[in-house]
Length: 116
Image (cartoon, rainbow, N blue to C red; front, top):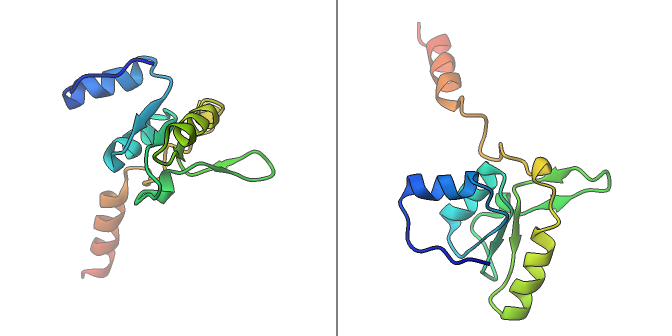
């Protein structure tokens, strides 16, 4: 494990894209970014305001949500969450939890269709 010093957003994206295996954070924004980029994440919290980022798998092994695991706030609970997060197949993390990036286009097309 290698803690990172404060970095710019460009540097942070480069770290995530550059082979980062896991993020541990208490930041909701970082949790979102990790999920969107397909990087497993442990939220060092007991509750989350980003439940859509939390990983869940159903019986067929299909993952729903992002690649985040709620880790709690103790050394023991975070250690267990790290073990779980490292087993999440990156290719199965739902990277589109916030949509496909076409919301503004869809809204403008809908508005154009109703305005005459």
